[in-house]
Image 1 (cartoon, helix red, strand yellow):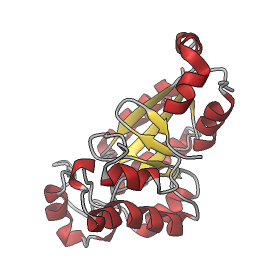
Image 2 (tube, helix red, strand yellow):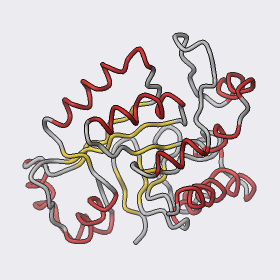
Image 3 (tube, rainbow, N blue to C red):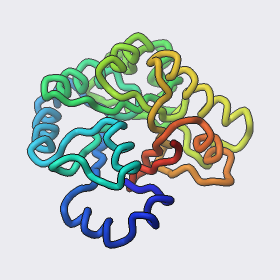
Image 4 (spheres, rainbow, N blue to C red):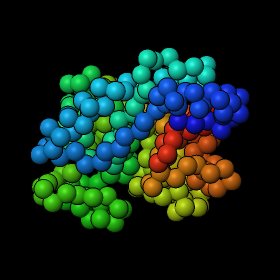
Length: 232
């Protein structure tokens, strides 16, 4: 977890000591969570619970705003990507059994693809369908997402699983950033607390994609190496 503005305020000694004490955040990513691997997923999550506290956006906000870690253990963010239906049928129930509020990052266009078109859409947009799940539908619906939002965190992950470098025009920005954030806000009743690009690219100021995310009202950017606080 990092916030460029706060790094200088808190100082290197603070961050060194906090890291040594384990008071930082581990983000753990999952994508497909098929039924056949339910027990494996449960074991993985339970193992993290032995050492880490699952976090909500409010926990991250509090750390940045106060400069103090308010938990006795380091935290972790269980993140599930790419709108898979098995995130609804497997991952969410397992998390709930364990008392975890997970973070879900759905590319919103996948929620609107008809079942008979989902395999082709997934292939075109770098989304994997597992051989062990030959029958669709493979992706969740908006109703599924609304139910997830009642107990979990719903974050933004573009519309079509797009990389930041491919978002260059105003039309791209509207389709991949503004429209997903708007629609997720409508469905969940709150602005998504976090945004992630494909490949974990951070939002770079001065680029169309970066500026759009930084101005979207989303508070956090999820990258491959950090949670970045990007808005108050």
